[in-house]
Amino acid sequence: MSAPAPLLTTIADLAAYVGREVTLRGWVYHLRSSGKVRFLVLRDGTGLAQAVLVKGQLPEADFAAFEELTLESSLEVAGRVKADARAPGGYELEATALKPIHLAEPFPIQPKEHGVGFLLDHRHLWLRSPRQQAILRVRDEVSRACRDFFHERGFVLVDTPILTPTACEGTTTLFATQYLDRGTAYLSQSGQLYLEAAAMALGRVYCFGPTFRAEKSKTRRHLMEFWMVEAEAAFFTLEDILGLAEDLVCYLVDRVLSERRRELELLERDPGPLSAVAKPFPRLRYAEVLERLAAAGAALPFGEDLGGDEETLVSRMFDRPVMITHYPLSCKAFYMEADPEDPRLALCVDLLAPEGYGEIIGGSQRVADLEVLRRRLQEHHLPEEPFAWYLDLRRYGSVPHAGFGMGLERVVAWLCGLKHVREAIPFPRLLDRLYP
Ligand code: 4AD
Ligand code: MG
Image 1: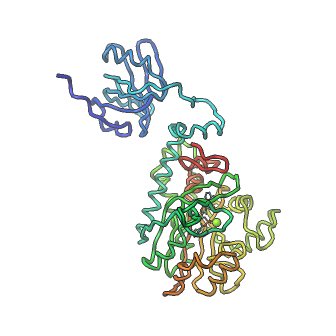
Image 2 (image 1 turned 60 degrees about the vertical axis):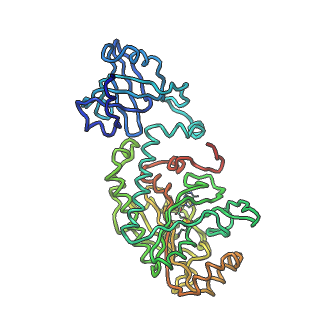
Image 3 (image 1 turned 180 degrees about the vertical axis):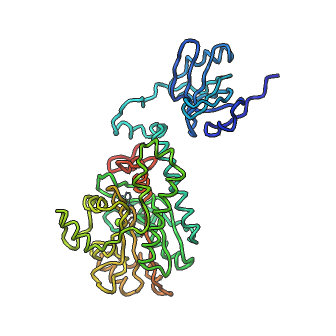
């Protein structure tokens, strides 16, 4: 009878098994030989651990199997767990068995500098690198923290459709698809309009899903497909969403600083600027921003939306996120409520992340009056018929309401200190890239 296989565990849990024999499964991260000793650094998704193979301490065939191993080969290794401060991860395995599962072909990504085009072509393999794993873990943390944040505040998750008959954020960035014999459908640019309907049912709601923008821009902030978390609440005003957005951003920063320190370190992300993020965030009106921009030699005429460069400039003027409100209605979406004190302006907000990251949140109070909304559709050259249901919301107990949307990748890029949003999503969809 053969001995029972040692307990199967993961690298992250090794601390609990010091002195005992365990089995790990994973992939070869690094190989090294020195005399009669072989060193194998294994990665299993939870961390890195070194297995030390000493001739005579494991079956001859297992020891010999080491020589066949290549980078990224998959395998199972058993051994006794030893604490060792010098080992990667702090623990080491004195190997008692080694079973290759699959011998990898020469791995395309080598520990050297590759161009970003090459890495993106091999995104499916690039994800295995410690840096990309760390980003994915931060993304997971932020995602869960968003859900926790809204759940704790009584917001109900409502899933909004991806196939839609209309535009939400302007007709120039729509992805169209044939919807059987019913004509054209568009991939959702935002769940907002549906969320407004749900807010009239449940009061406070949020959605979190993929959104699509056929943006012709090739910038470090734009993706064709990105994830957005959107909140909407009945009876909320601009003032209410300013507070909510501020709380959300602080919540996410705190969460990542407390739960993902290790990942930030691995990414060489200086936590200093993140620790400085605290309420209250500076609140500036669009008009004041124009003055500041002019003073900085980057004058913008009234009526123009801030571009990426202006956002970068403004966000660098502060050590924490800044909220810009009261943009001209003319440069914003059709559904925004006008400021009763100056109807040229919208009751809206863009929240800019610090360190030059630019807009991460956009939101507003929504038009509550039926006739005003009708007029807005006309002004934006949008057909009334497909919006009939949306107009209905202004027919049956219309109330002031407001909400915002936050782009997940932009937040992850900021928190991780990435140069480009493309690394903040597992498989980026870019202007010139749909593969892999
Ligand atoms: O400002 P936006 O366009 O607002 C909306 O879509 C509203 N309907 C949201 C709402 O009020 N419910 O987009 C919101 C956020 C931006 O602040 C940005 O973070 C992100 O979505 N975003 C993008 N992220 C990556 N790539 C793109 N092409 C993005 N476009 C917007
Ligand atoms: Mg916006």
